[in-house]
Length: 200
Image (cartoon, rainbow, N blue to C red):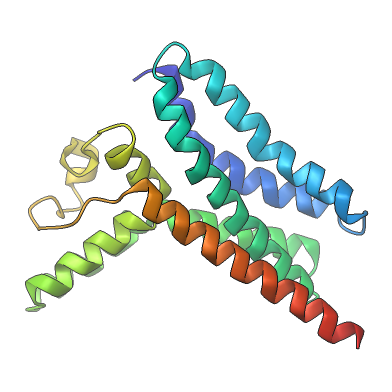
């Protein structure tokens, strides 16, 4: 695996944890300073990925940009909602980190549930939609199938999830990016609304 691809697969965790940490460290600081600190995390990671992509495929980097920026927007929105609910910065950071872990691990924890539901007689359509959802919200699987053309479910490590034999729709980075962005914007709007309500 190339350095570029390795760094790309590590980037959702780096952005998720790094962005939450940047917001936690700038608690109480002016909004512009917080925005600069938070934006420096995905910006720096994308710059590193850009340099690494010159030895691999710059075209793939272009598709990574909206996916990772929208993922960062989702994490920021979640953190700000927690903060608006008066949660301590440590709690907000932990919640954001847990959601990041939740999203990157969907296939692992949903796999046994999907397999059990199939064994219990769930319809093919239900199994199809669950596997598709598990991969569609996961940044790793979205990268793999729609940017890098890696068939993860058939690799030995992921084959143990026992999902490769079912039908599913492949994730697409535009749809996943849009989902992250919309969710992040909604969470951001909720955070702003909560702050305004508490000021009145």
